[in-house]
Image (spheres, rainbow, N blue to C red):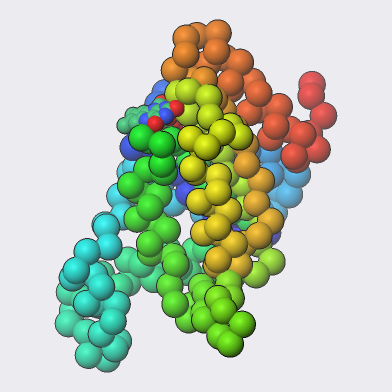
Length: 207
Ligand SMILES: Cc1cc2nc3c(=O)[nH]c(=O)nc-3n(C[C@H](O)[C@H](O)[C@H](O)COP(=O)(O)O)c2cc1C
């Protein structure tokens, strides 16, 4: 089993400090590995290694045939190719998803813009779009300062469901850690609730 963990907080996780979403994603992956000791894990940490945004030069590079690209264009496309190869190789995808200004972080959006590629991860045919990343399972760990689960303000869940479904990933579990900026008690309760959701999803029996 290949697991791809994508950390998308701007906060670097170090010595137990920093990003809640990275901490919870680490815990989830740890539990997946405990159940499947042979699992290979790839961590794509977008805080430590930010991925560049999709700009005019990048579009030019992507739309230039490979044999006609300049060295600079080839290098830019190669950055995206690395992310595409990682998700293609994964059986399980674990996304750390902080809420920033009611959306996903710009780093997660840059990753999404890199891996959503025509004729590679999706294609259009006579029946409309078809996702090409089949047979994968995804977990998205959502961390929020407030509480928005199930409300119209939670644009992340419908967005990620649509996007992942578009590229073929339809088996997606959402784990919610909410109220993290609402004081120490709410923070502890939000994290405990997320950990309980992870254990329930993975069939972990509480100690
Ligand atoms: C720039 C920024 C924007 C944020 N916007 C929101 C928001 O729109 N709604 C919300 O509930 N929390 C918001 N928060 C709080 C984060 O969602 C919360 O701190 C969460 O723990 C972030 O995940 P992380 O700890 O993995 O970085 C924001 C935090 C930052 C730093």
